[in-house]
Amino acid sequence: MSEAELRQEVEALRKRLEVEGRMRGTVIRVLTEAFVKEYGEAALAVAAKAHAEMSRPLLERLMQRHALPGDARGAAQLLTLLHTLGGVQGEVVESNPERSVRRERKCPFQDVWTPDMCHQFSPAIMEVICQVVDPGLTSHHTSYLSGGDPTCDIVFEMAK
Image 1: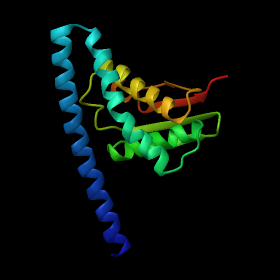
Image 2: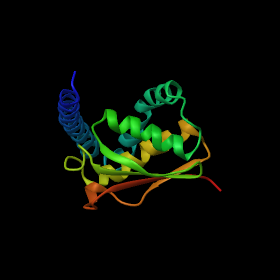
Image 3: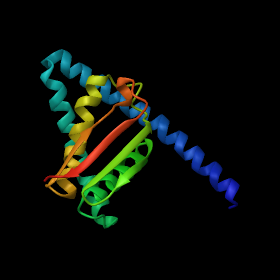
Image 4: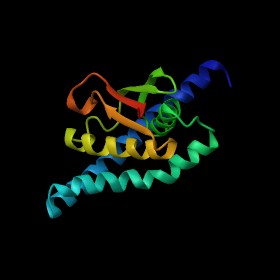
């Protein structure tokens, strides 16, 4: 396969992952909206935590298979693997054992989920990533695509 053909294959795969991600995001949004309608606003946090916990076995396998470091770098690398599988486009913009930052430029959920959903679902999965990598890690967002920011920045830090 030539380099040009390989680039075409990679671009076609990226587009398929993006479409799949939007479809998956829509299903999650519709189910979550139904739960919230039936059980009230508290159902949003419950749905976010359940979704995050469903990802735990995959995160544990990725962590082990790729022998990622048990620090902030490992958390950013694990998130990169998960988001690449999900069609999210971005990169790690800061990486050291104590603090790492992943910056997302494009997410298949950004136009599908409400800001409230992102503010619940994304931190919930980041919490599970921290638990899988090192319980001494914390995470927080400094921006959200779904909130109109140009990027979604996720910070991982070792607790002081």
